[in-house]
Image: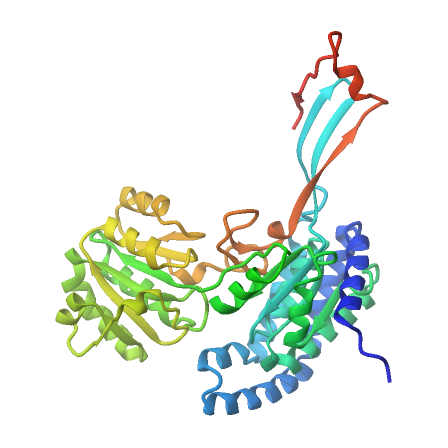
Length: 437
């Protein structure tokens, strides 16, 4: 029986692969990605069988109160979801190669030229919960951007993740030209704790999970961390909103997929339209089975609502629950979002572009939308092919992170024998610093 690889050996393999993958041509990567997409569809039965076993166990956990229904919803894979996985991989394959782009080019002096050129980050460690579809999303983005990846999915999706990772690894190998070891899978929490210490091999960690989980990762590693914790997203219905449009946007933001991190958790309504808007909104939410929790003013308009407590404003429900608050001004709405939000995705519904412009610039979030559902905050939907996650960071990458968030750059200098000593002292040569690009 083959000896099980240690986390360190997997990380070392990924590091070696990353150094080779950085130089692989885009045509090779594109071919591998197309093969991966085809293999996901061809092996759909295998994926569904593994997922069925994971879901059966997860349903027992939900029944016992040890797992949330939202987590179970994220775990379930069907033919449509497999088709979506394959479509996402193909979309990534079609993207331009992000590696080797010249960002700037400066002539420092005659025949002395420096270029700023994009290159892969190296080895990405991705840790996520019950989302088997995250495996092809993350791995395809890493392959396209020339990065190796170490994946750790939730234990509740263990079988699904193992099968999908195996399919991806095999398809890439059969395509040819992709170094072995570029994709690795780890399984236990102990292994996660170990990779947090492997800053010699791992260049970036991308955690996707609860606020406590992300904070734990951030507090226990020297490796840079990219990601978000909670998705406390808001829809603000302005005094200049079109009521029917506002109802549709708020309803979609909450109910289209309530277990998603970009689903709305709080609805803010300007007092000037509350009497007209809220009864219609309550009918829509009521018909969809949404539990509404309201501030005192909201409860005067919609009778029988559960009272919203202070903790509701900072709660990510990931369920068919929404908190509602009436505000006296747009500024109050902005202050509420910046106080209780998670800097993820927030939207304003208004017919006045000047008011929208103020909101878009004042709300301190990665994604800020005007007259559109918060559910559009997604890498595939905004044209990135897929996303490795949504970042609320303010450095390197923010919002839905596609291939551009997995790229860094270096500086490449070309000369003809120049030395610094010639540019120092009383007779020093002068730099021209002529911008070429």
